[in-house]
Length: 479
Image 1 (cartoon, rainbow, N blue to C red):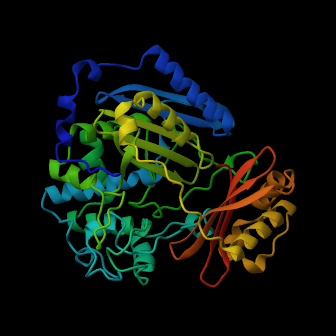
Image 2: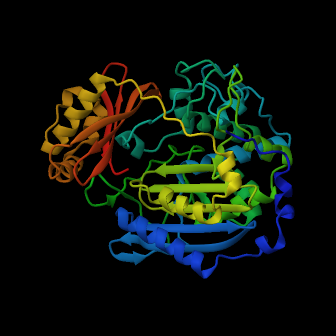
Image 3: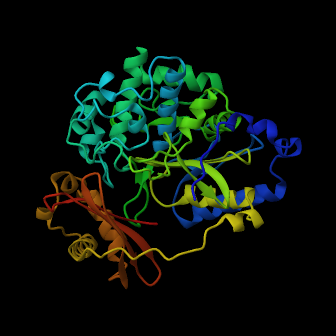
């Protein structure tokens, strides 16, 4: 069951016992974190991890593991910046909340008051844009970066192109994750304040919180003192990830910082600093749909429970990067795990291990957990399954029926990428299992998720079909 954070978030630090507030990680706990990081790096070729842990509202641990660069091999540095992907969304939301606190806008303003050229903007509020209930179709809901994504773009063009398209649903009728909505939110913040979004982030959040190395990657690109970004095709060796063109990550992602920088934001959330109590409550309160259904998303953050404890979280994925950020408001704790790889599950794996260490399951957690029930098996889309099986076989053979692909996917599956798929999948032979895990419509595409199993290997396959039946996206990767 989802529990809503109350307006007393700002009092949490004062309520925590002094002994807890002052408690660093013990040597045994450090050994457990080191072991979790080592296992995650061994389980997949993720080059590096940077970890920060908050306990009692204070930063008590920060350490980097692995290699921030593969060539030449360069040890990871705790002061290196990583792109945090969609974890950035909560900062965009915080900027709008700061502007609302200052009377420069209201969350119930209609989007049309700040951004032109949008569908339904006279009915959609900024709050709905931030909690993903506006109905805007999300751009680039693909599992690869199209060539267009490597070229610069004006965020206003993104808003007009995707935000100006017909709505996916009536505002407030459904919840659907939308990068487009956050571009609209960023443009609205700029319109209301007369300042650029990077300037707002720096002036209103990063500087006051002492997040010294935080900034927009499109304004302060990652350099030699930061990590390099890596991607991977199926089970092939990691390769340098393509750089995202300027503008595509505006407001929806693209912030770069150290793990300790992100932890400082988490500490502010735990202590109720920077934003007003009402703003923190708005940020961490799950949205309700028009019919009263409660979602699990506030403004830029998911809100749920873990081990019987309240949790505010978001993950992030960008070209060459992945991130996990988790805050436990009742426990004065937070976990940050950043990786310079957009494949594998290392950040989640390590965050889960640290979560289990910080929040040992007890009687309260056991009592709070609802009885386990088996989820209903999803209806099998036989046509999509046959398409996915055929594409897997073609990639393993190194040959493709490109007539079934969109031009963007066909261009992505070029010689180098196709060679990696053939090298990684060809040696595995025919799978023993190909099971649909999920089937849904996401971002206007029919999306199917599969588990593909061989004797000693398990991979995940994602297929996305366009309305005309063309394959818009297909990827095979490690879970």
